[in-house]
Length: 402
Image (cartoon, rainbow, N blue to C red; front, side, top):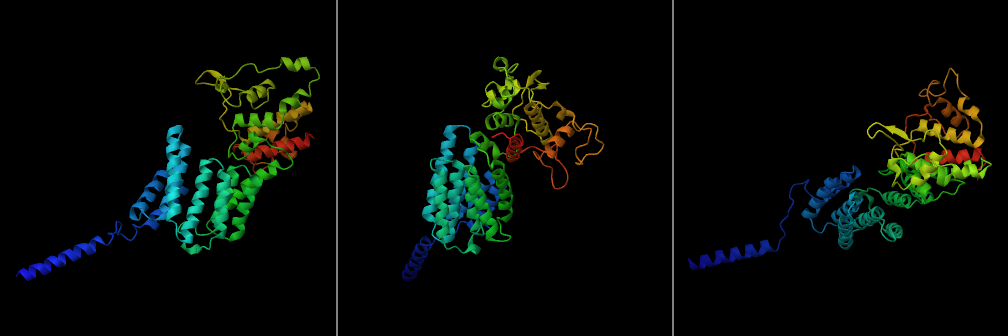
């Protein structure tokens, strides 16, 4: 009996020791695995669902603490969260977390595919944070990717090496290096006919190409470059472009022979919403010259005239503003009524009776602004930064202003 008990005891001890030597799987369901959660997290980032992405990456890390891509994903999440933080202390916390996860991912990355994910994450994190020497760090990571021999079928999310070109293009765009950005997006388009990144790169390439064309032949300063990448130009942005990039104050002053008359000119008042605005002086200069379309507007809530600097400029309004600039520069007042009385409009969305019709015709017949291939002018669509720069460049050419 004692012998049997001794044997049973030994069997128990061996079973216990054996179980201690094996790691118990935390995630056993077929879809509850680190690769799946990482993929779902990356797709959530695409949809700008940062919190969802974070939970997915955390689950991937829970399933396997040594799964390198999970830390890459968490690094990107923290980097993106810094954009949402206004408080410097909280921003530093997220920045430190991004760097910590990036470092862990680098140590854990063993396969070429994991290293690829890590290096692309490095590019994305540094582009989002824009810390010291961020562009060089992104370029170095991109150079390392070029040396990797990757099995693209094993790239869980990116699916193709051209993803690195796409994110390098975004980095150059963030750095306002427009020609280099355009080249990188073109590399994506040339890599595969219809890869995962083709559509995104095509859209980005068209956008950057328009910016490059808009800046061709002119010197654009920092203000112009910052506005060039905007999807929608505000009233304050346009005022700044007209004064800083087009030198409108100097051009208008050159049309007035008496200097004492110019010295007396000034804005009638400073709108309350421009008191602390960074483009305050530019807006006051525009107001001094009474540029039509950029006058202060009456606000019913405050019962005061405000400039409304954040309000987007629509294409019809842009035509009206540039028409007034053209009239002031040429001194030809007849331009303001040149197309009055016409019965038929070349644009289905701009009737001859429209407030903007004359201005639209003045701009399009001179090639300063263009309609769409569909035939519409898109009078109510916002003006983007590249479009605003391009229109001003052509206006300067038409006026022989250099």
